[in-house]
Image 1: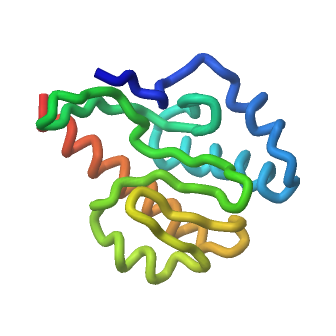
Image 2: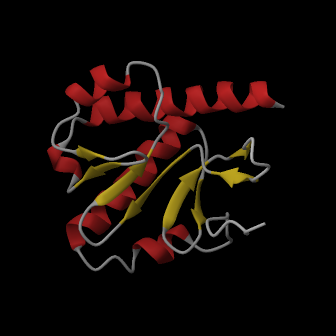
Image 3: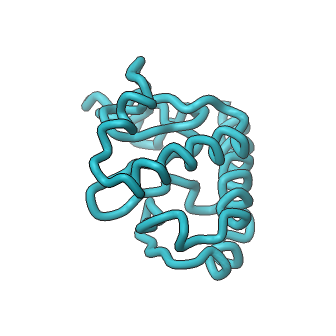
Length: 141
C-alpha cells in the first residue's frame, strides 16, 4: 500500500513561511496561522514540505487505505493560497457566498490575498470545518 506523502513533520512553520518570496503572501500566511490557531484551538504544524496544518484526524477508507490529515490547513502556493477545509461543513455555501474573492475546487478554496476576503467569515468557516471533522471522525472510532 502506498505511503501518504503528506504527514505531520517536525519542520518549523515560521522557517517555512519565511521562505515565501511574495511579501503579501508571506504576511497573509502568518496572519492565517493566527486566525486558524485561534479558531481551531490547535497549534500550527508542518504537514509535508508545504502545508501548514492544525489538529489532526485519522481516516480509513473502504479500500483499506488509511492515514492522518490535518483538521484544517493552508498552503501558500505560487499563484494562490490554498485553504484546506472540510467539503461538508455546516452552512458552507452560505458562508462562501459572503466570503469575498475566491475560487473553489473539489478539495480546496483558493484566495489571492487576505485583503480580498471577509476575515469574520473565514473564522466561521475554520470553526465550522474543524467541528464538522471532529464530529465525523470521532464517530468512526
